Length: 284
Image (cartoon, rainbow, N blue to C red):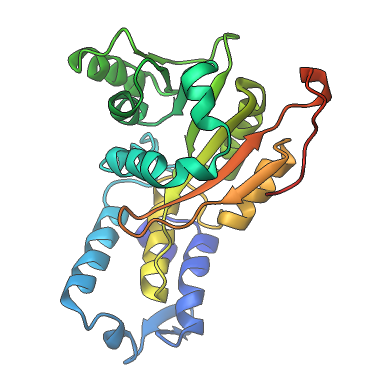
């Protein structure tokens, strides 16, 4: 069966290929699928063809993550740390009300959740003077590697990589990847951030942009599933998860075409118990 050959559950394969059937690029053939002539025009551009083929090879390389394999999930910020930091501080900071003030005079602490948190933490040090950054790594191997990367960068006084969050001072900003983890794990991480982020602080959930063409979108869904993530976790679903765990304000930031990132932000507004008398205000 096709699901056995690619190492994915049958529902994942159907979820990836059915949009191609709807787009008339693939047809159902008895118990399998077959391409149709309309598939070639989708790949008529050589650069586009190369990009799709490269992502497909990456998606199929090695055993699947949460779908039966034992390999840890891929690093979330590999090659994207600079783009994420630039998009945040050059483009999106004005849309995140109060964050600049918190980073300058609030807790001055940032949390980066892994896998691969050290790469982004090191990059953030170049943008944020005097801010303490904590990287959270659940996997022992990633924890050891992250600590080594921070020492090699000479930033051990500003960055720490930990395996668990201590009941310490809250964070002004938390960054969490959502493309490489099952939905239940993402929901658990977001619920924990409700208490870890200070009032008026922000949470940024980050994932790659979804390609607009059906073939590219199908390959991206396959790669996400093989990496251990949930290919059905889109922007609307993320906003629903964030609201469900208690964040009163959520918003989808404008897509970033240059670096291929999409960000859903949530603000942890103060409650009456925080002493300022303001409450949650719904989605913004």
